[in-house]
Image (cartoon, rainbow, N blue to C red; front, side, top):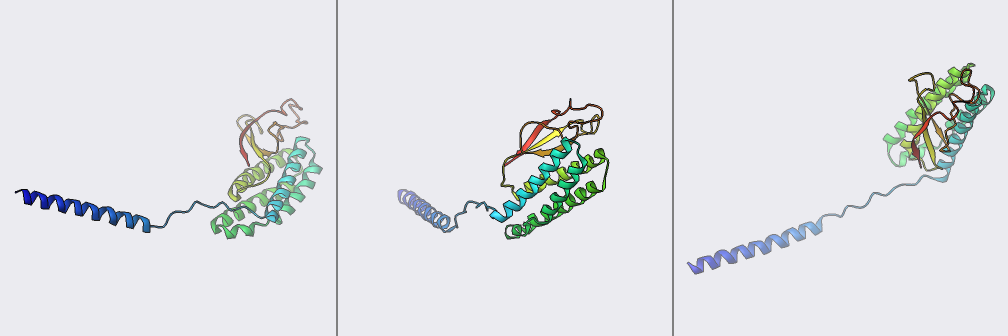
Length: 200
């Protein structure tokens, strides 16, 4: 009986040792997962994005002043820089990112061009709202690497419960929808709004 127990014990030890070394060797043979490497955009790519953002911000400032001549001038510059974006660089990373960016650019441009056809500043602001609504996700899609931007919101940009969003390079609220020369509020609602998000 003792010899049978000794054989069982020895078999269990041998099986345990075999199992331990087999699992250890199998585990070591598995390739180690590498950390995801974040790709930085080229200087040319970032400069093209920066040019578009700067023209957008100039256009936003013209809306604050309700200056339709400056809005159209900066709108034309904005469209020109949108046409010059170096987005083909995104193909190196992921073709789905490139396709999403191309669709967003198409929407941005369509709304900016519609804005240039308007003469009424309120209608122009509606198109600017849509430019902003497309520019913000575009910058997130491409992995924006420029100076910090703030995604800001006015809950009554177009009347009660009709909000409008915009991008700003300052955390201070300077509302492009109600602005300095609003027909009803004058400049009393210039600071109406809040920051909802930021990009950096």
